Every structure is written in C-alpha cells, then in structure tokens.
Amino acid sequence: MNNHHSAAKQITLTTGMFDILKEQIRKRKVSPKNESQLMIELKNAKQVHRKDLPPNIVDVYKEVIVREINSGDSFTYLFVPPNLARQKHGTISILSEIGLALLGHSVDSIIEWDTPSGEKAYRIESVRDL
Image (tube, rainbow, N blue to C red):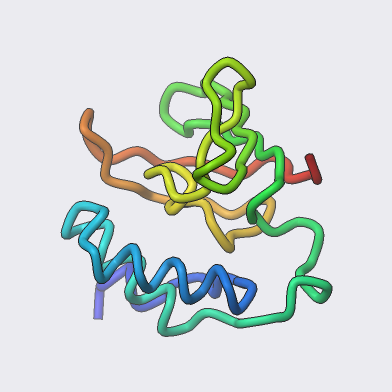
C-alpha cells in the first residue's frame, strides 16, 4: 500500500477542458508516465461549468506562477488556447506539457511531472485571470 498515486489530488475541470484532456491522452500527447498520472486525475476529476470554476484553479486564460521545488526557481505561465499561443506575447498553450501538468490543480498544489530532464516537482504559487 505504498503507492503515492493512490492519494491522487482531485483536480477541478470545466466540462470542455475535461473532454480536451481526455482527447490529448487518447492522441498520446504525453509520456506514458505522465499519461497514467493524467488518467488517474481524470478518473477522480470534479467537473464544473465555467462560471462555477473556483478562481484559484489552473485553466485557460490564467496567469500561473509555479516554483520548482528542488531548484527554488519560479516560472510564470500565461495560458491561452493553442491557436492564441505566441512566444512574443509570452503566452503558452494550455495544451503544452506544462499546461497539461497544471490544468485543474489549485494554488498550493504540488505536481510531479516527468520532463525531458527528469522528474520535476512544482508548487503552484498563484493563479489569476489574464
């Protein structure tokens, strides 16, 4: 019973984002390890209408500040729909790897994610509307 995935945090998603996340998994857009993590999160996800989404939840059109736990480095992401993501504006697609990792999580959540440079853990410091 030493499986830390059994205590998966419940994520909160709008119904639309729930369907999109499911589609991303079906298309194998993430690594197998991240895929199994997302599958567990989806299975336990709470679905709400957009107007009922709490303000501290990572979603599209949000500015999210995260801290990488090991390094202490802080990163700010401006999440937008894929068709609006522009490097020159500093915006990033909610369907990017980091977007998928953080989607539906709330402020103070710690997310472990498999990256090309190894497993990283991030803590969500703040979420606000763009």
